[in-house]
Amino acid sequence: MKLELFFLVFFSCHLSFAQVGINTTTPNETLDVNGTLRIQNTGTINSSKILGRDTNGTVGTIDVGDNITINNNTLYADGSNQYGIVNIPITANTPNTKIHDLDLDLGGANAFKTVFRLTGANASFTITGIDGGTDGRHVLLLNINSSNMTLDHENVQSTASNRINTLGTPSEATSGQGAIELVYDGVLNRWLILNVRN
Image 1 (cartoon, rainbow, N blue to C red):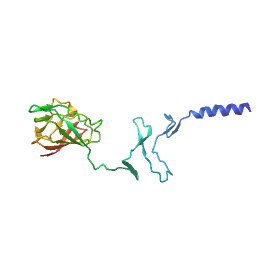
Image 2: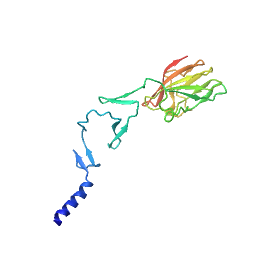
Image 3: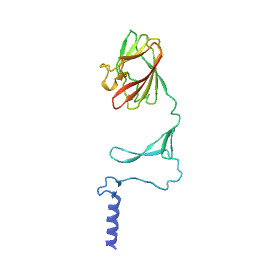
Image 4: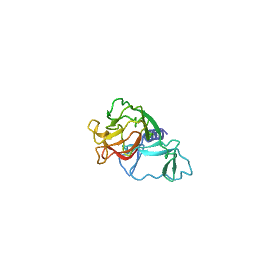
């Protein structure tokens, strides 16, 4: 009886700390799968989470939020056809004011904004770069001032990754009120001008 109890205690302690490997001889987690993962018999659950993998290969859950739904393994963003708009005050009191590395707070409060209404400029101003670009980030600079807004091509006064590529011209500008649409190219590490509207 003592021998049976010993084996029971020994193996139960060992199993509580065991790691199982499928298609691997050196598991690093409780369950380490080297291959394709498939989960069956999930029924018709409406899930608010998806699975994601970190840089180490560890799988965890990710909340999808209220405006994202999952249908047939595809994520859909509800209401994503609307542009968020925010006012950005510009200090330009003397003609040809240079604004280097314009901070639109793209990684913070304005992460989900697309239209940036530039306000408060009393004189013409030039933007030499925009801070916080990430691959595919789309912004529309809306100049509501009567003074001109210019975007310089590859101006060295801005950080290299914040610079603007005007695609062949020394600069692009609005004549007073207007808008300039840009997208960030993560390969070139530059903002590219897509459209200028006066």
